[in-house]
Length: 129
Image (tube, rainbow, N blue to C red; front, top):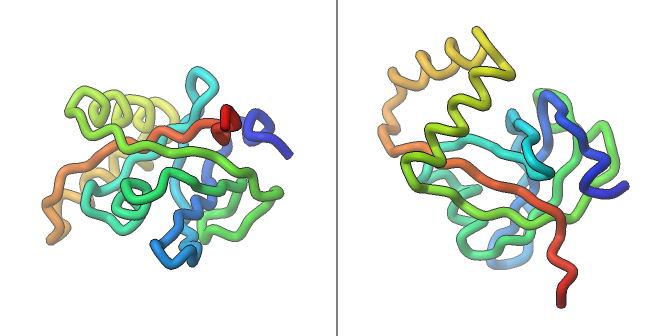
């Protein structure tokens, strides 16, 4: 399976890597656009910290619990933390997930974690060497 074969699923399992090399799998909503995948998350989350340390990730189409439903694909991720990038990702998610996103976003306002959100951009594995 290749990155382009992932398509635009409802969920992906996103595997990020600790400094020790140990993988951590998180199920996330995702939106495909322009040959890349975009995820929205809290800026101080573990996955953001791990991506800032190492951009290598693996992804697979998954269910809501993160159980893979496809083969794993090597990919590259970067954190987009500009307010415009975060707002664009909110718009993508609202368009794709509708009322589910709006409900999720509303519930997040009651969270104790008030850290700003960021977008994660996931693209094909860098094979340029």
